[in-house]
Image (tube, rainbow, N blue to C red):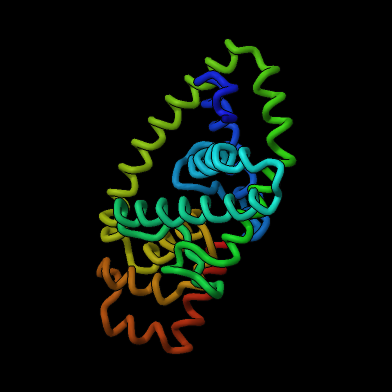
Amino acid sequence: MVMANYSITQIMFMFFLFCNYGWIQESIIESLYHKRVINRGFLRGPYIPIYGIGGMTLLFVCMPFEENGFAVYFVGLISCTVLEYFVGWLMEKLFHKQFWDYSMLKLTYKNRISLLSSLFWGLMALFMVYVLYSPVDALVHWVDPVFIGIYDLVMTIAMCVDAVISVSNQISFREKLKRLPVEKAKRLVTDKFIQLGGSVAKRRERLTAFLVKMKLIGVEKYSEEEEPREDNDLDEDEEETN
């Protein structure tokens, strides 16, 4: 078993490295797409925990099949798809909103997982096992254990504090929206959805329904939002936020 080759502090170190890697990757992609700086993820710091969980999961379930590339691909595809669906479902249950949305893609299930993203997870499994694992393994064994221990402690405290603050902010987010003028609230929601993932233009109906639920616009306004004139107005709002 691969994990047996590492101490607890080294396993935590790899977990945090994958969290950092995920934040760097997603923030760069989203910033380039929206042509402005985007701090991706639910938390505020430079880490996305699901990448840490996903990275460690891939190592745990895929490394035993290292000599069979097809097995690595399909085991990684299945395990990460299950993880993505479960985390998406859990976040929706806790915070009553969707943190990523594949509605713009074909062949999705409840917009939490999609065929395209699952195929990508399989490729990531191959990348993890045959490309990324060796340098990460070398780095973990090269870095001073004292530094690893300090890094683990700092990251653990930072992520715990960050999680408490972020959860508190999410709980108060709806109350904040209710106190804002409608147009400002719409722009704030648009910005928030972009930060958490995906193009708002692809989920305009869900965004409008959310505004109705929050009583930021009335039912009559909801009907008007589906007319071309209002769609164009919302597109203009989205362009302003970008």
